Structures are given as structure tokens and as C-alpha cells.
Length: 163
Image 1 (cartoon, rainbow, N blue to C red):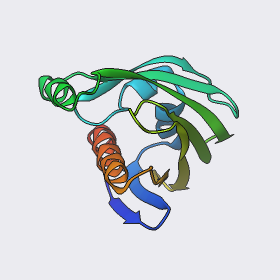
Image 2: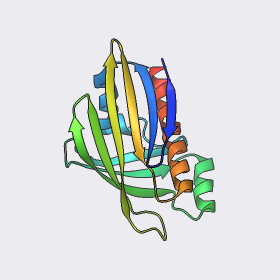
Image 3: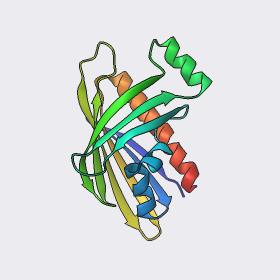
Image 4: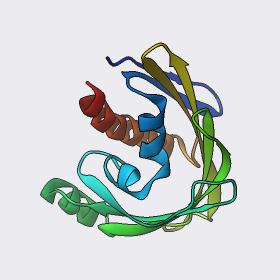
């Protein structure tokens, strides 16, 4: 089962999905190396996790890697590296209920480093889990739109898993 709702307001982007799954299984996709690597990143990208400590204050360090010939070419055409390290921390962890990741956005040329949050709330109803993802807007409308599109793309990977 899949449902996808998106909303944008002045400061946040909200994406929702509902899956016929156990909350523990959906939670593990966010909080284990194997789970995270299995779906994170928009289509055409993958990640390699170097550190993942799913506890308040714990680190999440990974490389975002273009892994399709189209994405590799697109990144090169934009003058961007095909891989970049990402540093995040788990700002809040309430098992099977809520987590907040704080990402350091420090990989954009000409943009002063800043932090951006991803909050995820898990709501269980019978044999389904509704996952509500709330993203901070980024430094520009263009990057906010790319973030929304990228996040929707990576959620599509979960849709096929729980389809």
C-alpha cells in the first residue's frame, strides 16, 4: 500500500507515505547501516555509510555517490563531484516514533555551510505505518525544489519495497 502526499509551506516540506509493514522494519531502514544503504539517495545515486549511531547526538556519516551513467554525466556537466561526503547527527531519537537528523550542508561551492533538519514521525495503525517526513527548506527555492524531488525519488525506492 502506498500513499504519497506532499505539502510545502514557508519553512517546511512535508512528505507522507503509508506502508503495509511493521514499524520495526521501517524504523530499521533509517537506523541501521544495511537499512540506510538499501534505499537512501534519489534514483541514480547510492550511499556508503561510514558511521551510523542511532541515538541522540549520534553521528551519521556517508558518501552520496552518483552510480548511474546518466547521473555521473549530469554531475560532471554541472561541475559537481560524482561523490561527496555527508555529515549528519541524530538530534532526536524516540524508537519507533520519531527521529530527527540534522545535516551539515557544507558541500555547495559558494554557499556558507549551514544545518538543515529532517524529522520523521512514525504512526502505526493496525498493519500499516504512516511515515511523515518534514524537511527544512534549503538556502534557495531551486535547491529546496531539488531536495523535494530528490527525497520523493528516494522514497519511491521504499514504495517498491513495501508495494
